[in-house]
Length: 149
Image 1: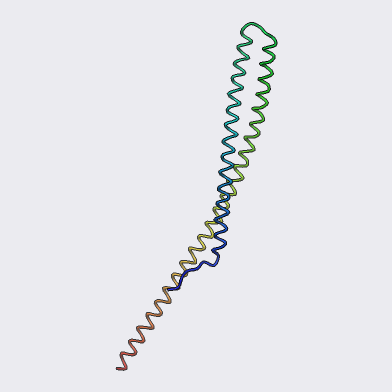
Image 2: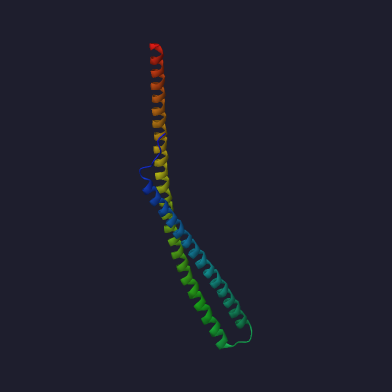
């Protein structure tokens, strides 16, 4: 029996490598998105602490300089929170781009695998037909040789 050889195996190999690369890029983007989200949560917690501290200063003895410092610190943290929200949005956008690349790479690889399977099925059918033909020829030869005797 002949051996099956997929003519476009090298293309399938390239598609598999591209999919692996897309998976790695997706994993990196997902890790970055998680990291940015953790930073945002930390900044929000810090902002909440600053608000509590400011509220405590306002409700206790009035120390204008301490209150002003606390207000300034709160404004700075609010600015950092806004910036971090932008960073998180950018990280999420990168994650979506990586996800779409991964999806495209997976679809491409699957398409080539389906083509390979189809060619293999055709190969098996051809081999079965060849084998059947050989058996028919062998049987007809034996039958013809048996009549001569």
